[in-house]
Image (cartoon, rainbow, N blue to C red; front, side, top):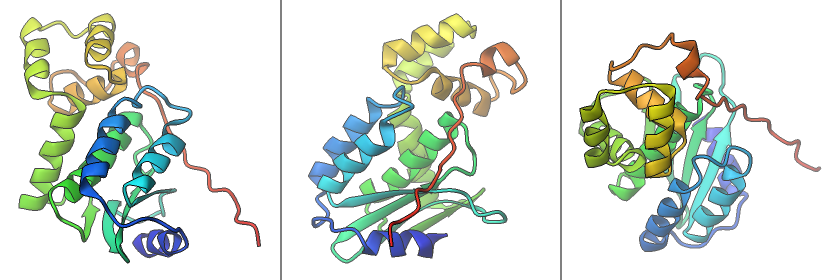
Length: 197
């Protein structure tokens, strides 16, 4: 899967990686978590200007790869897949890989349940970028986890409500089988266009 992404990246003209521009593009990406239709093309363009080639691939069955970062010529390749389908896990995976780049880890493949300092740092970056820690603690202090309270908090921090829901479930604060709350989730499916010959 990573080699497929590298092969795609090699066909794309991209400027030299610019970390400062990339940080700005990442901040822009955070404003797009609710834009489920157009986020990819918008993030792709913003990242490309910063020298980061953003590739999403459909999952290959049996692969336990969540994403990857690789240096390609003078640019960076950032790949994620649709293995988990839900928007909350997609955004977390994306920001996990962004975290590797921000932290200077320019050659990384993220596997399911992988551990280590680099992975923990990338997880912390993703977690705190998607939901600012102080705001999250304030929300938890209220102790109210209804559909409406989640939506209001998500609006306050300008994130998709599914991201907040996923965090609460991951942290064991609410269960995974509440159908009313799970309606906050969006599902993504990657469809590749056939390349012209």
